[in-house]
Length: 361
Image (cartoon, rainbow, N blue to C red):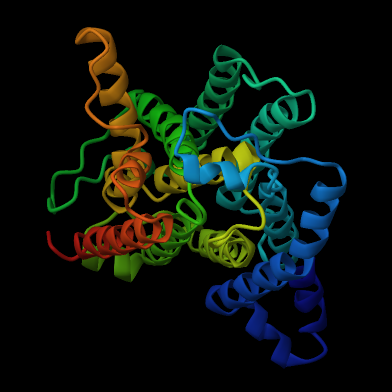
């Protein structure tokens, strides 16, 4: 909206041409989403408290979590509102990369909203039945994957980029759809599993989104893309704005979600943010890099898979005291803030490691 207003006003005053620069609008998008989150946060928290939409804490979890019972959840709505508003203000709404990312954010947010609604309003501990949750995740992810594949403007948009390899970049063909599907759905559920401690999931999400913003900028400029031997994708630079908007909204949410949390994001936040990271990684052709940079999410997911597998195949024997793995460290006696900050540090290391692979080829 404001972008189109600036374009109109630029014919009367040349200074408005500054809004045509992606980097300038990326900064404005970050600041707008951050400010919107900080402004709306207290209002959203108060609204959730009035509706008595509080977190339900499992009895079999760490005893320190019992004090979290009743803390407002579904705070991810704040993130979605902030990102949507800021995108409408500063992004080019004719850009397909932006529209795809926004569509994934809102559609997965709707799935999470229904799940949270059933848990905290209808008092159904199971929420949205798992098979229906995965069904709708799959429908959306496959729809997006097919759309990206059949609307690719060049063969580079369906190639697989392998870190550390300069020339090896195979065209995936229809397998692109399979990879995109697992990336979007897998990332969505991985962030959801990680969201178990105050601020644990949101800051790694912010870090990865920031790194993807840089990659989108590089991939959207032919000189940088050729220099780094990564695919050049037309109009991808506009996606930088959406990524920085996610950074701003995430930091704004962290203001209220940091230990001890005033609000939790709920599935409406974690499912949508995870899926959005996944689809952005698909659009910038860096699915493998997402696994590296989002290593904390991967570790959390693997810990659950290993725990369930061990329990079923080894007669009820467990590998960890509790899964996901952040609960394991809690039960070993680590204070919650120590677990959170150490996971943040690991995430920061992995993000920089991932970015380093762009040059180490």
